[in-house]
Image (cartoon, rainbow over all chains, first blue to last red; front, side, top):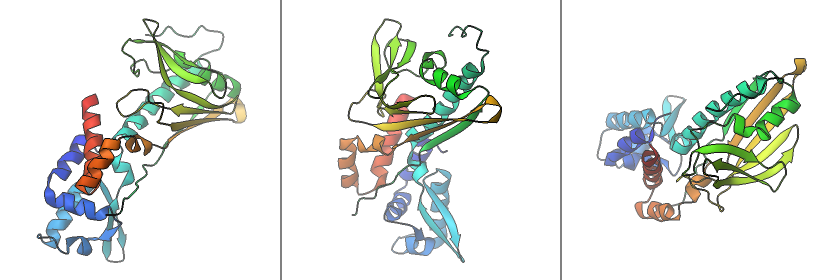
Length: 109
Length: 160
């Protein structure tokens, strides 16, 4: 999961931001995203690659086209934090639950 | 511009614990203070204990070294030894917020051999974003998701 700083950096570019905002209305193929922008289609593809690396968009193949859409999971900085948090918490819970019952709970450190 | 609601997927975790279901439930609820990571507290004072009241309508909260109590939210359902549903009411600024309700559901299933399957789901994560009214205004003003993302990022970086 990309962090917030990466996501922010990806959106600092105005063209990328325009592309991202177009995707907010629904999934779009590259060609449609490029239409009306002052950059070439390969450039749009490059911008999409940056957005994808930042975890903001995802893509899938549809025939010969690639369809891009906003990745709902990419928005969740908080979600990423919670995900890691629950991993750690449940690991700790498992250790405690599996401790032999006749032993005293360990002292908290 | 049409508002677009984007729902982050719930956080889902599952694990097998080598103990029976009653004990697993007991440790998760009554003895939550014995395993809850110490580093995760929202009060000013270091965390001394975590308490989950064993009934629907109860609360769960942390107690600081100085005896202060910091509320985390409500216990929405308490069904030993199979299920507990908690309201996680800590907002993006890591403060208790009575108006924010995200749900943490934990289910315990007995397996063969006396083990227990524990499944946790933390859902309604999009509500963290809903809470920021000023953010919403900013989104409208800025006409897209850039605004909300920026706010997420600011919250995240402030915490770092």
